[in-house]
Structures are given as C-alpha cells and as structure tokens.
Length: 219
Image: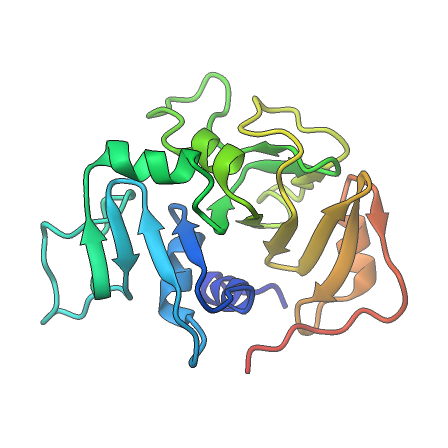
C-alpha cells in the first residue's frame, strides 16, 4: 500500500544526521519535525526567521504568535533563535543549510524540480523555494509518485516552470525512495506491499532497478 503523509515524513526523518541544519518546506516536509530520531540533535529552520523549530504544539503549548513559513503554529527547542527574514535568507543563500526537504509538482531524471506554479492557476508566489534549492547542500523531495489521475510526477523532463536545475539528490514518494544521479532515477527502497512493477509503471522518466529492492522500515 502507498505510504501515508506521516509515513513519508518518518522515512525522510531517517535521512537526518546529528548536527544538521535543516529547512522543512510547507506540507509533508513540516511533519518531519515530529519524527527526529532519538539520539541526534538537528536545528530545524523556517525561512520566516526561526532556527530551532520543534514539534507541532499541544493545546497547552499553543502560541498563536509562534508560526512557521506555512503560517502553522510551532514550538521551539532549547537553543532556538528568532530573527528577521533577511537574516534567515542570508543563512540560506550563504550555504549554511545542510538539508532542505520540500514538496514538488514534478521532478525529472536530471534532478530538475518544478514546485512553485501551475500555469493559469492562482499562486501566492515562489516563496523561498528558489533560494533553498540553490543554497542548500542537499535537497530531498517529498511527493506522491503519481497524480490523482495516475499520471507520473517523475519525468524525463519537467513540463512546468522550474524552481531549480540539477539540484534534487533524493526523492521519497508514497511508493518509493529514489536517488537521482547520472540522468536517471535509481530505485533504492519500496513502500511495504508495493511491487517494483507498480513503481516502474508509474515512473515516466528513466528508472534503474538493480537487484532486489528492499521494503522501507520505520523502526
């Protein structure tokens, strides 16, 4: 079966390393804050000016003035810092973010990402996405493998306006974990109960399958 939003976030959280500075985009990436592995410390950054973002608040912790870039209420961890957005983007543009996790409409086999607009649809703007994909040292994308109409979002070439070029290193979808390299998607893991054949059928870009593909684990 396809992964839930929470399971996708849990799998992405396994990519976090001790000492990382991490930016979490709006949507599924924000959920990663709830699943930081025990025994490591990471500093989660929100581009509206918060470094040290914690889990979503309980009702007792709720503070309407403490929000992330998606206007959701958040908590802070010990050592957190609050500053203006200019300083936040100086951190991003200066290459001080180890990992960015963000959603996307499309990703292609060359690591290009389209995440900020669909032509003829109302948009609020690109937000910080272009700065993040240009400035972060590593990019992981979370997305559904295919649209609700069954059309692949993992393409030979993106059809929508690009957010960044040759920047995506890894993708975690509701069906699989894939690495992007050498002009292709490399299948690393599959969701529990999902067959390799299903992943192949829903991947429009060049997909490399080498050996037995293990199922994801969430322990």
